[in-house]
Image (tube, rainbow, N blue to C red; front, side, top):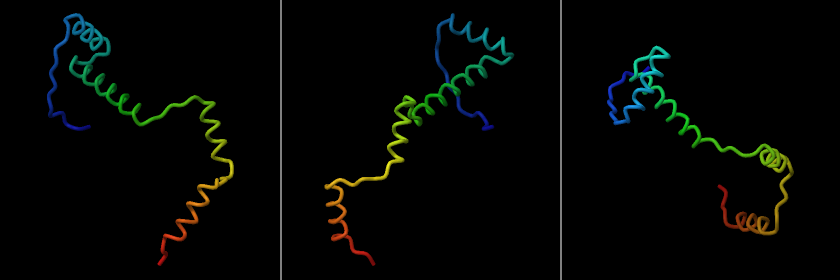
Length: 91
């Protein structure tokens, strides 16, 4: 576990501080540890949510089915491939 060397301070309402202290007491943690863990957990959740894309199951099933279908090039794609063959020099 990394050594804690940075400090973070913030103000909050007395009621919020009392709630945090009570919750920390219920899990036998110092308030600072309780708040730090809660903040780190929330940060991880937010960062994880930014890396994941959630789609409905039906959409995902349709996507997988479409990917399983053989590719069928259209006219524009076929012309682009011909141009690429003419332009690209292989060594």
